[in-house]
Length: 415
Image (cartoon, rainbow, N blue to C red):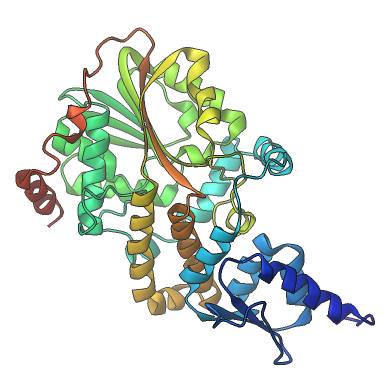
């Protein structure tokens, strides 16, 4: 990099402006050993920047370049990564009246290519990397969505079993129900519904790795006659069902395809049918973090509740229940991150050090985003507008949740 007179002064001035906005002191150590800080208090973290080019990238586009530089090892962190990310998130504001973030979000989200071909490519990049990798840090059933913690001292396995039961209660599963699941992961929920509620399930997924694993589990557990795992796009769902369920797929659908998803639900759901969506969302229209979109979840977008109504309104679906479980997702990610760190050595051997740093940042950043309210986990239960077969109270969701017999059921099921 050719130095312009006074340029280093400008870099430091811009860097100080950024540091001044942080709610806790952070110190930046430059490649020449000079330290930059805007506080005399002890720093919560020290960030070592390897070279001048990296510093400029961080100043000009911190959302993307912090992740790039951390993953590549061009910056090093002394201190707690989670604590630093918490400082960064709490230093940002969601209350700005500026239209710029909203316009950028709409433009980016509308341009997301989640056609059948584009979706398959995006899903392959994240979910098909290796099932053995996910086995190192997910729960024993490979559930890669938010758990449900009846209390904070429940294990990850117990929380994921409780989540699946919670979903089943929300859609009021009955023996003999025909269920279609859009985006089934490694198959845990579909198998749970068939095994514990006596229903039949058709589960759609475009991840080849996940479908192979789910089919194997169905055969091993003697449920292949009741659960069919179909390697196909949700847009190709056909038939009629009593229940439509989607857990963790909506983030990958994309705004331009919400009405198409609503049409799929409308054509497959019986007149008395029940529906359920579980998804990561936002309070405001903002794109997913640029680095996460580039390196971890290409094509993903967390919608607002208002945007999700594009799935329901054209077909007259009635929303019965909306719940926000963001702190449950923060707790889930806390477990995932701890397990990931315990398996960092085999993960590094499986991939490389850059991969480990990237996924560490992704898991830690996601946990902090849910803790600080930048991300949310919404669950929506819905029916057709003229369906009066709906619960009179919410007791069906919570009765027995604190019952020792119920907890014994979870522990027995996961042991």
